[in-house]
Image (cartoon, rainbow, N blue to C red; front, side, top):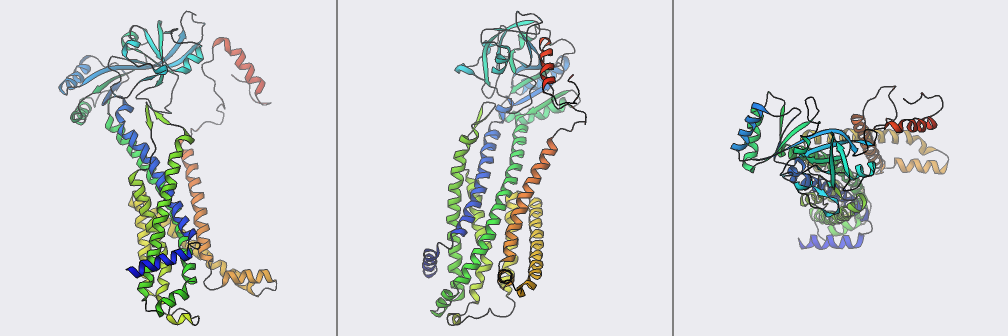
Length: 545
């Protein structure tokens, strides 16, 4: 063991320049895996851990119709039995006008949210200027509004809005709201008022499009049974029950899918680096044939020499993994400065390296380094001591150990792919696709060599020697084609997947659909809007309407 460790250290110290590419292949691949997994896991941990803040309660009972009469009584009995705290809210889209300017004054569509005492149970309703939220701010016809509404209507805190025929005084500006996700579709700026005040307007009359909700806070042990009981009681009604655990599960599932997909992307980077590792190892062994022969002349066995180079590969793989983790740490630390803070529902995401991502990245780096280097390293067993004095061809005959190693390496790579994909089926499909591609590229390499071989007799010196280099025994044509082909396949595959996802989420429109739709144009703005459109539309296009 001491001999193996000492020789591995001497070989690395003497040949480190030749092994830099080996080292970089592993470092970049590990860095990609650790970065991608750490980012996704950091976001998932925060969102899954703050599922209550995303929902605003332990569970929400909601309906598009008023929840009253016998239905309300049944719900109240269930909630009282579970020892739950309840607050009601209502949401609707409506128009808000500047109070005191009549019907001709400027108006904007807003998303109105009326809340009761106790809101919110989880999360924080953040207001600008460091103002702390309490229900007294909206009680007595007060309103909290988003800053864009103030800008649109040229208002300030202390001014009044007319909503549903009643005047509301603006008492604060909303910075972040619990229960509202970043990027959610919005019909207009958010306005928050008191539920009791909203009931005194005309917006909750019969036929109004209002969503009625009851936010429920309940002990953890009662969440699952209460949710099941309410769903059973309300299964034939128009009332929906949603628990925070459903949000947690949805968020976790979405992020797990994204994490496994991005981990496959990182694995492909590592595999491409592994192909480079195999090439470097093969060339390195060929350059060390005389050194290996000397060791065998001095009494070292073939297995001892193999152990020396395997130890060297593991050391380089470990060092490359450490550098890859350091690269990932730098990238993760740089993300907030590049993208800015990620905040939704008052929750800020803090990016960091996660232990599982580091373990998976380092483990994958070591495995890929060993697996891709193992088959070329087996050639050291066949080097004879007499190789020190003369060049000898490799022994004739099948090397069954080499074939067994190839099969074992292939199986191990399939297992690593399944591990990174988080699914045996998806990992198997990816591995099968790469195997098929490798076979196609190998056949293409054979065809290329066969097609180039007649050019070895060409009279033009550059052409003849280029053909000789491509067709010589032990050439790297197959390996170069494999590396370039896999890289091209990876780039085109990711781009095709991106285009497919974009098409799936795009909205299909008719051939005569408009290119631009203008909303919320006031009566005194119609002529100006039509004039601006007419002045900028291409010749021959239909008039705006």
